[in-house]
Length: 479
Image (tube, one colour):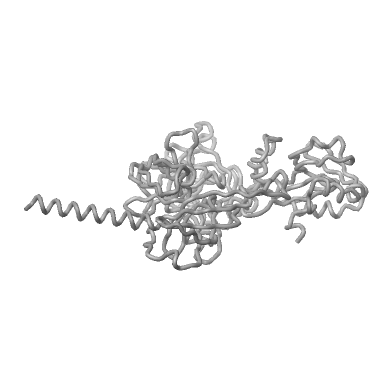
């Protein structure tokens, strides 16, 4: 009798597990994306690309997925597990910073019989996870099992910004993107990216980042993850520590730059020592303990806050400890001279007599190998009060008026007729306002490109027609 009872109990548990797995699978979605891909080397043109990804139905009638699954989308369809019908979907919210998106489907029948997946907590190292999705190589749902390898800050390929990420050893492939990683039946992360030329090293956007994004979007507006606007350096060198009078009991990072529009501009000074954030010690390598024996970048405790909230910082100034508070107001794009990777928008450009100008973006840098060293250096610089964007001569469309200048490409411009400018729009205004015969463009080394404005205006239509270009400027400038 005892053996029969054990057998029945095992059978009941097995059936319950199968039923739970089936409910989980019903919440997994395949996403079909048609995207309009801008051509940053020819910013007046674009191409179309189709791709697939994965997602999960969560509370509120949303589909959770990656931003890169739906980036630049022009048409979206979704399909539930075990069904063949596709439904039209729309992007409700997107965070290109955190590579996350929420989709909506208007037809309520799409959600019929589905139990939304719930969120778990940040998993521990060695915790077992199951990754669901629709990777390349098949049309049916795939489930792979693995464990959490590590949890620490990692650069998100989609945005180029660094946030907390979960490394897993579960098999992750193209098409898995946006699919949920579950532990004990709850979402602990969203599949984000994989390291190519590696064996089963994949990364998840952790559930803490997902919940921050969802909380952020509750007011219908995306504010993003805040940036302090600080340049810091490690304090591991003994001579540097002696110079600043630091004993072995003090750790932290040296503040060597404060961006002009940082919320901390008026309360911090260069050469202050940042020792704690929200009461958590900052180590000399810039890490903090977020769990016992686990360390990551100190910005972890900034990323837990929503925009507009306050963060507490402990500093040492002139060998005296101090505590300050700062309201979080800015994202990385407000701080860097070259903005993070752009999506869901066409690039800006302006053509003058076949000379093509554009703001420098990371998309543009990654689209070419021309002048990569100089442009990458510019991408690492902070904004200044009188300069928040770089403008480049993108290329020169060959014609009789541009002879000798055709080798100019990806060339940063510093002045227009001897005058500096703050950004691309101001550059465009200065170009339009030139009344003299010649427009003199100059880089920081004094190299010049000279355009005869009257000749450029006379030959503009002919050049545009020759290169099959409809407009001489992007829609944002036409408007």
